[in-house]
Image (tube, rainbow, N blue to C red; front, side):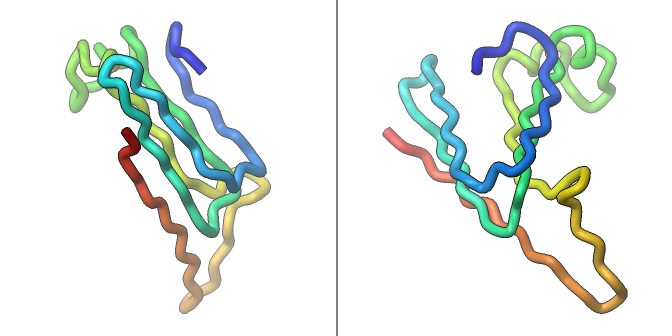
Length: 94
């Protein structure tokens, strides 16, 4: 996927590893995960970036957020004392 505007996408039923290809730096960044059924990909683009107090107006150009998640019908409900552990491992590939 290439960004050409604001992106805030939830991918359900995704347990596989994600690979981000950084063409500018000739590298790939790999995100593997466990106990996560969803992936969220986010970039605020121009307008939302300018409206965020804790985000530089031009920072949207050099970032993407790839989140390990369990959302919507795949969310986890925990009772007191219960836990759920998700992991994300980020690797830099040549």
